[in-house]
Length: 103
Image (cartoon, rainbow, N blue to C red):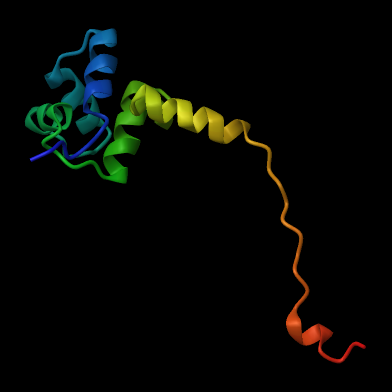
């Protein structure tokens, strides 16, 4: 079985940067009224736990980072490229019915 999430290694890194144990992270999440135990944190970090949008929001708030920082560098780089892209407004095609009677 493969990993069920891609943020596990980043959660480990962010937790280590702050000097938090899995228990401390779980306690911070529980203080935000999220039912996430130390076992769930361990399963997220190891990739055995699927992540929901609620998990992402809770972790983002606990670590006080932008959501994109929860994802691997490759995803962060794609997000950066996406945000820098030039938006091209497509030209509207004329509606076929509007041009049927024109000659």
